[in-house]
Amino acid sequence: MGNRLLFVAVKPVLVLDFGAQYAQLIARRVREANVYSEAVPSTITADELKAKDPAALVLSGGPSSVYEDGAPQLDPAIFDLGLPIFGICYGFQAMTRALGGTVEKTGAREYGRTQMLVDGGVLHAGLPETHPVWMSHGDSVTAAPEGFDVTASTPGAPVAAFEDASRRFAGVQYHPEVMHSPHGQQVLTRFLTEIAGLEQNWTASNIAEQLIEDVREQVGEGHAICGLSGGVDSAVAAALVQRAIGDRLTCVFVDHGLLRQGEREQVETDFVAATGAKLVTVDEREAFLSKLAGVTEPEAKRKAIGAEFIRSFERAVAGILAESGDAGQTVDFLVQGTLYPDVVESGGGTGTANIKSHHNVGGLPDDVEFKLVEPLRLLFKDEVRAVGRELGLPEVIVNRQPFPGPGLGIRIIGEVTEERLETLRAADAIAREELTRAGLDEQIWQCPVVLLADVRSVGVQGDGRTYGHPVVLRPVASEDAMTADWVRVPYEVLETISTRITNEVADVNRVVLDVTSKPPGTIEWE
Ligand code: XMP
Image 1 (cartoon, rainbow, N blue to C red):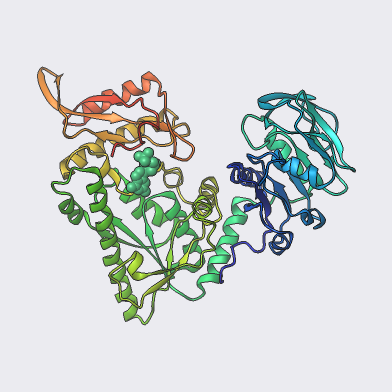
Image 2: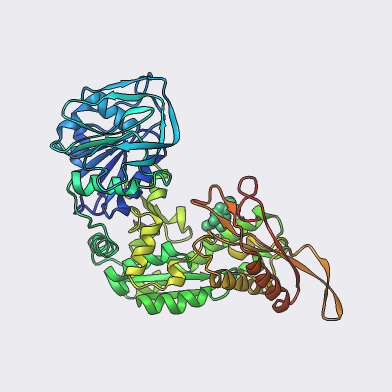
């Protein structure tokens, strides 16, 4: 399949990125309206755009003023492609300039929530005549280009929205993509459906069907392997590939002993039952524990775990290769659960990279070279979950909270031993159970439970004095794990967790709550 992106059959709505972090968010909102979308740099030429065969264009906001030197420019020929175009904030102003309207520094800046007055038009039909929108602009459009109806205004923006239904052009000064514009999603959807005339066919079942077809085409009669981490991305990627090529996929699961309660069973039982995938589990618990003996420094732990993980995976793959070699087959493909945000962050690679054995799974014969299969590389996390559900994966897998690769190894402060792992597993299972029971899973991004294995404190239980370890609850809310806030878990829920852990987990006589945001604290303790 060369370097073409998946989904050639689906025409994208392309979001031209003028340098704000909003372009990806807009692409996500377009997809939430069930229309496929991708972000592209604003420097793209009309010819390059045409080659991508888009269904419509959205011009994003940006940090610049259209007057600044070096402000991102737009190839004016894009307005002659006959495509529907929606301009947002900076994109709205760039559109105005390109089509002969006027943008001025009026001195009336608007930042934040502003009341907007609607005056007819298609975009805002059905919305309250006056409603709040989120503004962030210094310059203002003072005259719309010819052919446009002005359909909204605010105190600082005499032209806050305009549309030209005959050319399928529209624009808004505010940011419809942010939560603070409460009707923004409706307006974006109305542009897509009412002005651009697009169908809302980007649904989980269509996505899954397309992806399965794409994988089938890419892999042909080949064989693939996929490392399962227990996380949602690798599980959904594997399930898709399994649907596409059946038993020519072998899944590999390394049990490093640093898993939480029930995780191995989730993969071995629930995942396999839901997908019918061929699974090889390798029990590497002893190997990891022996490598971790005496290691207390966090970075040293991570390195030891990471290195041993690669070695275990290699051993498993070498075994599979040897077996398939006996059967006269080779394994050509490695499945990875890469998501769209990773692709964008790494410069929008086109997925042609081959992984040489010595780079990733070193130790395999030199002539082994895997081609990558990355069926999720155009999906956002919520879409991955929706596809997982569509494929029949159970909620425990689809809704799994993020869990670090080094597992419980970096949640034991001190040396990792089997006994300590058992203690932490038990405490963690209780916390997870109670948070789920209290209906907090949506609100909590993840809740590490940390065992302070090198700390002891005095307690009293029954008639006796105890000298046990504390565990820390670290419930956090986050959008992307880059920043986080601690979650105000109701006292009654904390009380239940604390009582149960101290009663049911030997060796733990104290439960404490971490009330630090990130920054300054990281989410994990190590
Ligand atoms: P921190 O502790 O840096 O964590 O605030 C941010 C997010 O990343 C997860 N995390 C990891 N994930 N391998 C992973 O796959 C790792 O080594 C690792 N360290 C932290 C952490 O759980 C949180 O979601």
